[in-house]
Image (cartoon, rainbow, N blue to C red; front, side, top):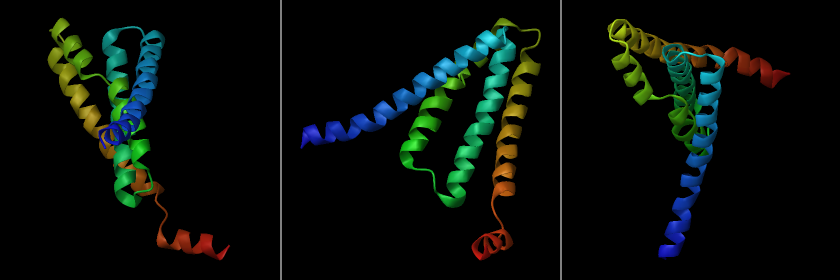
Length: 136
């Protein structure tokens, strides 16, 4: 019984690890493409907030995203792509702009989540669109 439980727990861990590996590499690529810690950290956190918002709101609306996909993309990829620790370190090491950076990051991050929610709602087919698709 214990072996079966262990094997059952390995799959989600592996899925998260795969997503985390990809997310960390994507984060590194952004750092290479956009030199300067503040800019790259700000960019990945806003993009990551939008992507996580799409993932969450799309899941809430029609629940088509499989749990394994949520583990890979949400818990794995986006968690390692966005970095709170780097965000805090950037703010502490540049005190002249720390308040602006922190405020801007939170405002843009929440804004990205709300934009994601609106995007998911906008992309959702209406009853008329579904009826047209079924008729054709």
